[in-house]
Image (cartoon, rainbow, N blue to C red):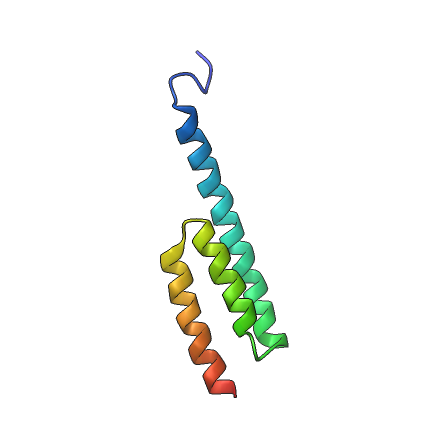
Length: 77
């Protein structure tokens, strides 16, 4: 029996997408942390990250970090 036998190919694809999404999420956080030290007006960056999260099935995370970005932005202006 092969490793993929008996597994719905659509489920395999979805699991792969979620794993990819997790990697993209971590990468986005790394870039966000770097950006905070470089660009204090980071609303555009946050919009891009939030859009990325939503496409990758992380809407709740996108909302959480986007709200944080608004408070960070307003405190630095």
